[in-house]
Image (cartoon, rainbow, N blue to C red; front, side, top):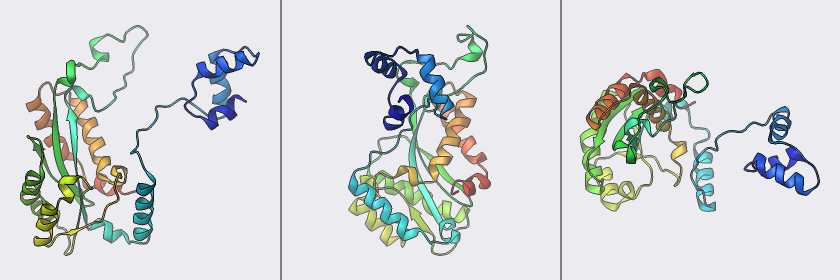
Length: 251
């Protein structure tokens, strides 16, 4: 009964099950609930955060998957993937674990410094291909369509050249309004850039998410103490990402 209920509703807590069983006349402890579930191969984990998908988004993702199901690896290797991400000072974007003794949780070596409101953050735009990371830049103001087109003008083609992309390479970006604005579409068309059609609400499909995760972990390990250092460390760690990681991001 315990296992069946939890499999039906994974968000059920041990306390919920203890109370439900007590109302049914059975007295158990939280430890008993945990042990029973562990024997069935179930363990408590943090729920993954995923995009909220409406039926229209699900259909668009299925359409995208079916259209590209048989694409050869060479086609994906000829795509430049791009995205923006925010990185917080003091590692708010990542979780750190430490090995420590009991009652040593407040020892300086076992803590991460925090300040109100996270101490600030920076917004980054970056791109990469299977051949390695492209350019990474800090977006210092609130981005609008004109600023986005300026970023592409200054960084997209130089990245393609540095990565030695093959003729006919394809550019990927998501469906942010700045990306899909008429002026941006027209700019891309005039520059003769091929753009990969992208399903809405699908950041998890973009392999650059793997590079963002790696970048944030590396930056947090270096514990920058101010925004200037945060930006410098981001650039340094991005440049260190090997081509092999870019390649493995697809698989």
